[in-house]
Length: 519
Ligand SMILES: O=C(O)CCC(=O)C(=O)O
Ligand SMILES: [Fe+2]
Image 1 (tube, rainbow, N blue to C red):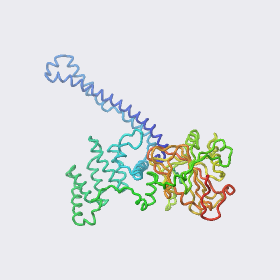
Image 2 (cartoon, rainbow, N blue to C red):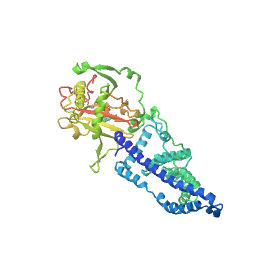
Image 3 (spheres, rainbow, N blue to C red):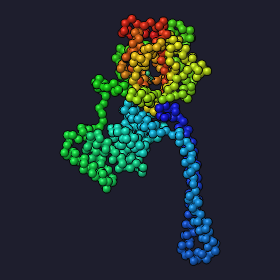
Image 4 (cartoon, rainbow, N blue to C red):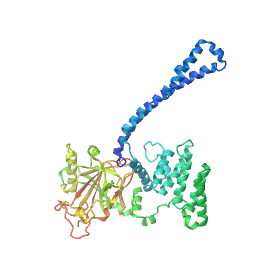
């Protein structure tokens, strides 16, 4: 599939350019073909204007007589050749040749799910989405067909609330476009009515079915349905009339109090939309400094610009830690090895694509990189953290897909077996490099504590995953918010406990905080 990494969708643009080239030549050949047929028709029309007035005078001229005979033997009799001239075969052969590179239904459903995720997380109206005015790039507004195809995919997945939103948006677009569309109005009313029925809004279901009947009075099922809905409304109103029927559809706005009652997932989404206000005194404790980690030679020459952006857990931003050239190199090296993240299905035990993580990633070792960029970055991490990289994981480069996200998680292993045995043990700290800016969305958020980091190309975030006791710091739960507009590239370096014994002293009590003020 391609939808899980935008960089893998770039190939589709050149593919489509190729296909359009084929389509243009087909159209040109067809225009020429029709031109020839049209020319013949013009000629016949002209001749007939004079001939049909007075055929006998017309035919008294031998040239006219010759032309008439000629039109039959060389015109009508051979018209077949022009009408059936086959330009389609070449076109279709070209398309089938490239067919294997086409996105498939999984991609389509992935793209639809992405749109819904963005709509949900960022509280976007369908009309804003179809307007194509989310970002600053030029985008064609969505057509009623595109909106309907999205609505149908949602409808087929039985998500009736969103199906309703998108059927209604399709109606709005049909009305706005005001010209013919391949979308059948009755079809939209039909699905909209069923969605309302499933949502328990019988009055609305009946309303849309009546509109369907206005459009198509002989539709037998619609007639029966109207009668059925009316019967239910009359006989069992308390059971069938949802309060929604009486109320508006819009959800309530977000208030400070409503944050309290939010589910964890809602808190995460709310944080993705914007930072939570922090207490005033908080700001004064945020600091920034140049850091050379006890006069580490490379850092004396070029100290790291550090900002403390959060206290508990302490989150450090290392500004401008990677150069443009290094970031280009990381993306270039990772491009060919990017693979979709998978997770074990608890029931089947099989690896399956993980829906909670829409991205592709690849691991870079210095073996991939004869030019030494990977080694140099490793050494820099070792310099500013003072931690050994000998037990760290390789650099993991990640490219997000359409609406790509990574739901709240811990970087450290929470189950006993996964990280706590073996000599490398658990992930003591994370360095998260941002290899791109993101135009809208795509923040890294810490939903338990309300911290939010907007990606800036070249920066890295650093935090300790473990407390001094080696216990996981439960406040470090974090997530990558859905990318609304832009491309998001990040790169993880996970540093392990093994080998740090003389570099970082562990704590003596279970609840000692994480490691320190400077990194
Ligand atoms: O992309 C992000 O902002 C977070 C990524 C992350 O947490 C991870 O890859 O473990
Ligand atoms: Fe993470």
